[in-house]
Amino acid sequence: MAKKKSVKKDSKKRITKKISKVKTVRRIPKKKVIKKITKKVRRRVKPSKVIRANKSKIILILSRLIFFAGLALISFILSFFLTNEMFDNLFLMLTILFGFIAVGFLIVLLIFFILRILRK
Image (cartoon, rainbow, N blue to C red):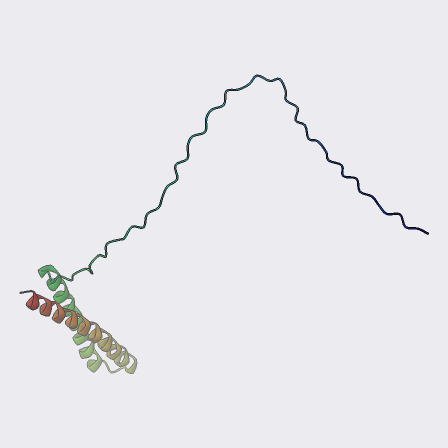
């Protein structure tokens, strides 16, 4: 049995376009597309914000310092007068908490005083 070799024919198909006889429309020319060129822009480095020790800020910090120091003192006094162990522990914890907050405001107040002295 002899094998038949398949022969491929080079058949090129011709593509034709049928043009219909339709009313021709006037072509609108395409707008020229302007390419935007991006430029590297150097951003100016903003200096860090200067902390100013205004009188209103100092008064605000001083009032908060007095408030939290007063709360710490009141809770410390109440921890001695109450005999219940639960209240004693509660008021001692409040004393520590309010004391730390008052110390934080004291540190900020001292920094503002130092800034005010150095500015002059």
